[in-house]
Image (cartoon, rainbow, N blue to C red; front, side, top):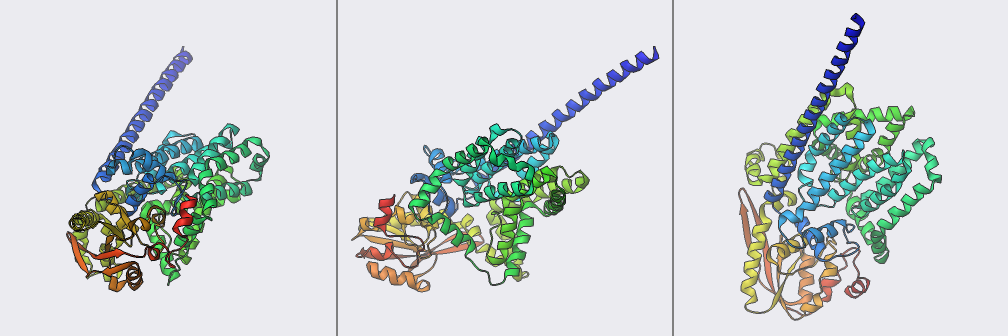
Amino acid sequence: MFSIGSKVREKKTLVEFERIRKEKVGTAALAAFLVYALIFSLRIFLMEKVSLTGDEAYYWLWGKHLALGYHDDPPMLGWLQAVFTFFSNKVFWLRFPSLLCSTLAGFFLYLFARDFWGDTKKARITALFYFFMPILAISSVASFPDNPLFCFWALTLWSVWRSLKDDRYWLLTGAAIGLAVLCKATSAFLAVSLAMFFILNPKSRFWLTQKSFWKGVIMGFLVSMPFWIWNFQHKFENIFFQAHDHLGKTPLNPLHTFFNYAVLQSLSVSPFLFVLFLLTFAALVKKSLSGDFSSQFLLSFTLPIQGFFLISSFLTHAGIHWALPGYFPLMVAAAGMTQYKKLQKWGLWSCVFFTLFFSSAIAFPQTTARTILPFRTVFQGIGIKRFLHGKDYEELLGYKGFAKKVGLIYQVKQKVSPLFILTDSYDLSSIIRYYTGHSALTFLMNGKGGQFARWDNFQEHKGENALWFSLHPLSQNLMADKTLKKAFRKIGKKQKFTTHESPVTRTFYYYFLTHLKNPKPLERHPSVVLLTSRNSISKME
């Protein structure tokens, strides 16, 4: 009797334990869902609140000029812009593709972590690391090529992991890498990472002899075909531009740029989480050397991109977001570092703090500027003045007002004679087109935003007058002044206006240009890199 009663009580205990466990899992899942919904709602609020930047307006124009590729980046963002802004050009729809892609990236990371660990709790921790990463508070609510890249990068991690266990997933892996190629040039590190894994793990090299693997390779090539076709047609212009723009800026002090890169990296993921990632990386290296399959996989998809841009920070001004996909495997690994539970907790809380801090800074730029303004004389060395009057932060304070005044000036001048708008900045031209609807042509002194050379036809405006808008007077841009004198019959007096968003005041300069007599100097300037003549461009397009 005693033994039977014990078995009954033991069975009841197990049933009760299982019920409690399911309740806890259900409660944790519900709490996680509410957190994800909260962060999603915050980002929708920021999408509507934050002013449109010049880069975003430029990418919006990509959607109005569909192509297989663009001077600056592959075509994915332009295609997404075309779809989501087909019926409406409101800022919400312009930015929604980025929010959608960023959210999908978190979902794919969750799937990857769940399959990697076989544990939904660790998968939720991974997703929390991702969704509360401070840098995503900014990038996920703005229309940048990085967000679609994050989506397909995370999908690639999950599909490769599944492919190594089930050959049916190699086609999905190929498609995911091909889609990543259509987003940004840094997708090349996915192929490098896969090659590194096969080098580190000899037992997995048998996949190189399997038809399913090579079917995935063919799938990736076919999906990415638009990128290759466009670059073959344009002499690999996009690839050379990326190399020149990202890796061609040699710093005066390599140690300073490296230190600056490291500090910004720690802030972009939060300091505590950054420390956890360093410890996680060290553990992956140690286990990889001992032959651990899982560690070798995660290390292979972390080291190439992170190592490359870390070294690059000595040689150029590396962007803080360039290496961000390299943190994805570290998030998965860090979620399983049970010996660092306190650091996990502090890492998540520091993520929440910096996410809210950065979100507030971009949502309320005037308040932020007024708060830090008194410190600019006390802490001159940390560059507060340069920050307040820098391009990136000023874009949140003055472009909409700038476009409104341009529209008013244009309406007055157009009553006298037909004219077109001309700027020396792809930012200004894009903003003018977005907010006013007027076509603004661009004369580029530095080669950036080269896609305008394909959209603008100065020959159509021969004999017309123009309004020249710039952030600088022509007296500070002698090359532009010389070129405009060759192109136009007369340059009017310097005029200016200001846009005031307390405490920052921005000044813009404009000139009335009389009679475009010679369009060629505007179309073909020796300082413009990787741009050919208008006629050859039109043939290729």
